[in-house]
Length: 368
Image (cartoon, rainbow, N blue to C red; front, side, top):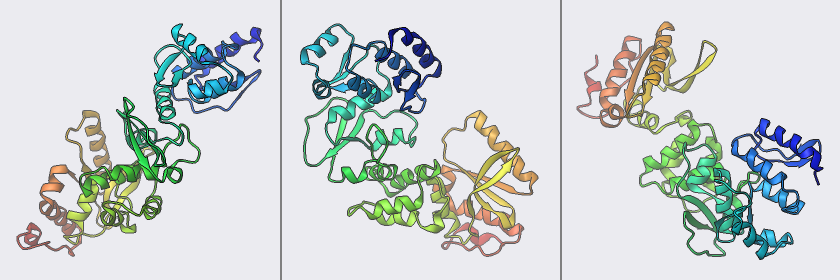
């Protein structure tokens, strides 16, 4: 137990460091998680200034689970239902779900909400689909509702705010180390592809994961091989072939598939790295031998700061003797032959003549 006279000093340290949670003993912190949510330092203080509220082992478990405990955990720890009811009635604890409690007052943070969801879903449950994508930084905003997957050996009643999936592969797809339990990033990506209504939308999840560098083509292929059933398998396998390396968005995929390849443009380098003023810049497609770069922008709107960033990048390329052509989604998706003709015309002026029309009437045929 922490000596009473030393608790205020450690409380101040926790506020200053904003650690997410830790197990506190005199003079040291055991088990420290990444610093992400400042509210958790308040939670840590709350838990540690109540030395008699919970037995030590339950306090440590609560800290690990972001302040969330189940009825079963509390009772196995030697406390009673009456104890829980008393704390809830006094508003010192709060009910998150049936049989799941936050052992603190105040608004639960996102981490506590996710722990509450996976604990409510029961043994073997893991966060999955859009919620696992959120934790892997594959999406930029919290998922609503929360997605969990449970083993196919059991069923549970509907839980408000949760989407419950059932799988016979929960043990295989669970991440071996991260908590709360969740699917591995490759499995998360493949799960999301199976919700897509088109092959292109499915591929979009893969390009997003690759573009954000949270996985690799090889790992995705390995994960695909472990699935007996996989919609869009042929399209996804083609998209992960070695010569598609570096394609990091659906628009880049379309450019390669509908512009570069069918019109016999030279193979471009994908996400070509350039150093400028000590910073890395990446060009979507670079035809280095001919000094031509193609930049692709799938955004409907182009915020001012990003527009000027792109202008500066184009100017830097021009200073290096590189001509930059820039296209949007409508150009590539609705006028691929027109885009190919324009790129081919610039390449021809710089020495390339191997392009060809993709079909009769293709404007590439008019370039001479």
